[in-house]
Length: 403
Image 1: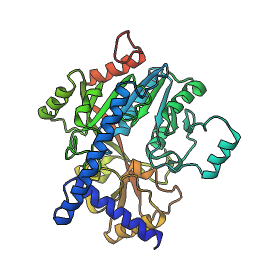
Image 2 (image 1 turned 60 degrees about the vertical axis):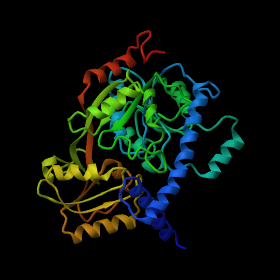
Image 3 (image 1 turned 90 degrees about the vertical axis):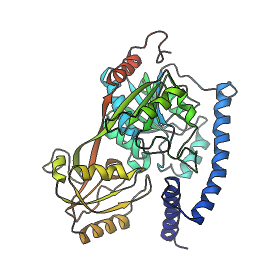
């Protein structure tokens, strides 16, 4: 059995499971598979509830690190647009004089070779240090070693430390000791209970808040909806500017004290792959898309929103390919994408920024390849956002961000 064949079969099963979760599959086979996933979901729910109970009753202990810890996370898997919010928050903190470190587990990053781990254990008594993606001055790891989001954050946030380690207590201690950090931003950390957060920012995708209401693997929830009560602030992401009283009432019912901040992800420009920043043609305004034949591809949790952005700015989508979230493209994948785009007489290919970091820098491009740069825009609750940053920079006694 060849590895490429196995990889395609595994990808096909994962895509089928995702389609089932989002209600895109029907029939007897889908019903049987859904029932099997539901049983697993009940088990997952029991484990999630038990774990939280153990921490709440101090049988398992979280660990304060003596500095401010901002937790950014979701109740669901993927698709809430978390990275731009982490970037905006870390930039605001940095600009107000905080020494900031972002702590990430480095999801789907390439682990160090086994022999390095063994050698470290043989020659050291303490555990290995976290991987340094950025020391605040330069980016030290690529996206494969760091993971997509940590690498993107490191590239876009000079002056901010970015560390990767599954043990984020250890990473936080390292950031404080080695870099003098006074503020830690815990990326995708709502379910990471060993490190005590000062402020919990919970992101909810307004276009699909809680999926089908089921926990993994039958749905997209990591923990029950009632755990909204653990949030200090709730960010409603991917908003179109229209209020959703029903969703807001649900949030308030579970957490009356949480401030709700509504935001949108706004396209900024197109960045051309393989062209140095500042060089002619490195960036194109969004008007470049109008009437242009575009082939889109992405490996993200919610490709529909990315493709809608392109259509909204006038692109003629002559083809599209969707891959699993965090899919790492190889040369064969990209050659096939370029060939498909040429067959459809596309003028260019466009992907997401997160996907672009997973493409080898020396890729030969027979057609122009761009990624779409997005940034977060606060639509409602901007004062609350400023207040949140202010509480972290200048915590008052008794405030939620104090310690």
